[in-house]
Image (cartoon, rainbow, N blue to C red):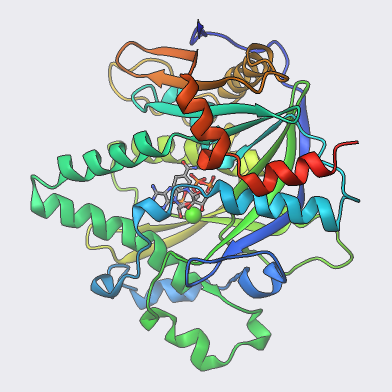
Length: 392
Ligand code: 0WD
Ligand code: CA
């Protein structure tokens, strides 16, 4: 079976459900996953007074001490995600399975949502149906190979390679200097002021798991959240409005910077929108990776910002429109739901976008591949046993 989906497909309406966080989990400094007291222990707090910009903070400082998780351990861990789902179903959902149609990571949906304006970026996702739900995960082998190739292609120009590694580092460095592990009032002055010297690591990660929907399809998406704007609300009140996405970008000094930034802002909008994160904070750095300014954006004002400021690349196609991307995303999700038989556990599928041929397609995988995905590749024995045990 091969089904292609035209790139100009758009849903007529995009009925969106308000995202709601169901639970959260985290990865700790050792790379182990944690399910308990996650918010108290792993959520950090934004704290960066405007005046700190004057300190001319070097976002490349400490680069050689970067504690970076190996790529192969950072591919979006379905094992841990499924364990967190089981934990929720057992402890908070009365041993009932979650009422969703699709289970996936936010980053993967970002790629689909942003595709209309990122036609050069390939997508390769695997899909299996199990227990009346679809589980969607990046193909690890392809993803890893792609990241290695990207690194290799850059490594020809050592100077450029080194610079792009430093830029990557600067993003994590910005997170380190702009957040606190506890609320401000519980932090010592020393703790606040020594942040510029703190070792930077990308092991620790807080993940929010949110139920959302588009059209008739209900999705469960797990995504990384960088920090809180203010505090954890009491009495189980909606925490999503308190979350912040942190980013870094080149300070805007000429029209080409602005064009690039708009593309980044669009992707960041897609990423934040999908999880229901309402605030985005950008740290702008110069070519020497010195932090020059910090800007706060409301996620829901970005579509208007982009629409009202349509800086176009010369000779380039249409300008970015967030609502147009949303209609594409709605159409794709509906198409996946209609095309993958939900009750057939003998098959698995690959959803792929090939920039060369510009084709977006779904095809059936071979039997061996299906076996692999159902036995550890996506689904785990533990999760299958759990779901079979609670079947009514
Ligand atoms: O394609 C994906 N969804 C990937 C997921 C690619 C690589 C990693 N992951 C992992 C994440 O590390 C996390 O454990 O999956 C989990 C869930 O992530 P998500 O929220 O679905 O992923 P996404 O929205 O793509 O990225 C969130 C963060 C990034 O923050 P920024 O501000 O850069 O968008 O996950 C990290 C990064 O901190 N991240 C990566 N770190 C290193 N290399 C990468 C990468 N290729 N991709 C995402
Ligand atoms: Ca971020």
